[in-house]
Amino acid sequence: MQEDMAGNVRYPIGQQSFEELRRRDCLYVDKTRFIEKIVDSGGQYYFLGRPRRFGKSLFLNTLKCFFEGKRHLFKGLYADTMDWDWETYPVLKLDLNTEKYKTPDALDAVLENALLNWEREYGIVPEVRNLSARFGNVIRRAYEMTGKGVVVLVDEYDKPLVNNLHDPKNFEYCRDRLAALYSNFKSGADYIRLVFLTGVSRFAHLSVFSDLNNINDITLDDDFAEICGMTECELRSDFKEGIKDLAVKYKTDEEIIVNRLRTFYDGYRFSDDETYIYNPYSLLNVMQKKRFEKYWIASGTPTLLMEELKRFDVDLESLIHTRCNQSSLTGLDLDSPSPIALFFQTGYLTIKDVDLDTGIYTLGFPNEEVKAGFLEYLLPHYLNTGSQSTPFLVSEFVREFREGDVDGFMRRMQSLFASISYRMRMDQEINVHNGLLMLMLLVGLSVRTEYCTSSGRIDLFVATDKYYYIIELKLDGTAKEALDQINSHGYALPFAIGNRQVIKIGANFSTKTRTLDEWEVE
View (tube, rainbow, N blue to C red):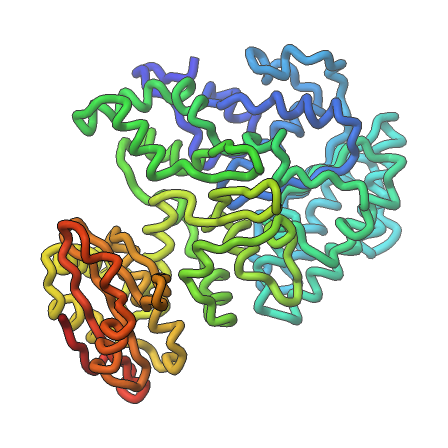
């Protein structure tokens, strides 16, 4: 049973303890078949990268209970059918997800606490102060006392690094500490049964990957694509009651609810195979609260990504429709992190298509939750809208674009650009384009920047049910020059056939006044 006395399903939102989840009889989507893949492979070292709140910690705790021989917790699950001895192995679980690591002392405190607990468990009196050496002693003693290989589980192994990408001094301190600690995985190989690391990224130049050339990175492995998150099959089988409840709440049929869930929360892809995954955190929340909201995106502001956008002057349009090879997705250079890798690994972009012949991946937003939520967070970074005013701003833009109120939405953009902070570099046309692009995407319009035609590239092309907008933008030029370019290059010709009206807008952005100073319309 996964329902309480009132017949309500118990959705384990934020629950990372497999033992507690099973004890309280909460909903659990069975992922234990992946344990069999791990133990039967003969591999010793594994790494799994997934975005935050995607179930990595829960899977790691499931592994912990499995190797601790707690078979009663697996009753009715796939693991209970495995040919396994269910003996107890020594398990060392290090959780690095408990701190923000803003000071060097924070990492040392977490490691010191873990080591003291292990040393107490295995009767070790520390003879050295060195944290790495103490960790090595714990691994060896655990093996000697039990006669079984040690299982080492590290949750969010990279969080101290991710949280300090923009603090070079603290970053180097954490990197040196972790590199020394993780070096025990190689030196203690004779005592280790399994090492399983989870995190956001496979960091380059860190000993855990450079020293362990046999580590199995299953992040984009077809066989492990479903290890975290929910498939549509799992949605329909494990969340039947929740789907029914949503259909009643929204006074519609269940298939419409499934379609809406798919649009909002599905779309993540972690393999070459076309296996699409629902965000588990959002899915559990919408089922419990019976309301469609941006749950995952609201659970953590993408501060790191905001910093990277400022640092690299990223072209947002090219980023959210980027093409790259697999190596651009799986690794991360510690000294110069790639925006593409960061956006993919943190869950704001996902695989949309794979060309198996060339090995080229096309990326994009996974779903509407991420698209709308991310752009709402990002918009105040470019335009001083204020987070509270963004919903109103979006609704007004929707109305003005759909009604063909050109003067209305152009004046709104003029006002927004005029309020931009002087810290934002508006002498670059790319930042102006990014601000415009986000506004259009937020209102749910079909929009492209640098739209290619046979005669040139349109700066901004927007399509609504009634109108095609062709917008050409000049930087410190004139609106007439922009409109003349639209006409002289015949940008409107491909859209002349059809029922929608073509509206041509030439506009000029002044770096002196830092806003749109004029526009002409045809």
